[in-house]
Length: 81
Image 1 (cartoon, rainbow, N blue to C red):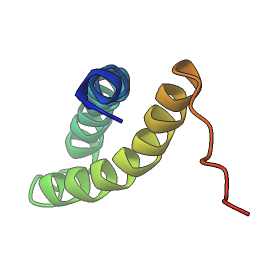
Image 2: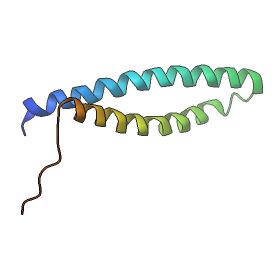
Image 3: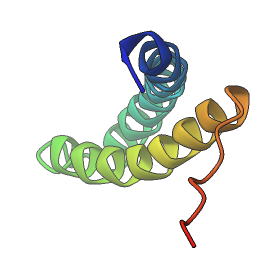
Image 4: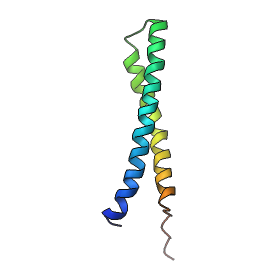
C-alpha cells in the first residue's frame, strides 16, 4: 500500500479527530470555567482539564479510525492458508 492509498485514509481520520477534539475542548473549557467560578478552585482547573481531555481523546481517536476505515472500505487482510 503506497502513499496514494494511505493519505486519504489518514486525512479522513485526522480531520474527524481535530474537529471532534476541538468541539469537546470548547465544551470542557466552558464546564471547567463554570465549575471554577462556582467552586473557586482555580489551581485545580488546568490539571482537571488535562486529565479529562486526555481521557476524551482516546475514544475520539478510536471512533475517527473506525470511521476512516469504514469510509474507505478497508477489510482485514486474509490469513494465508
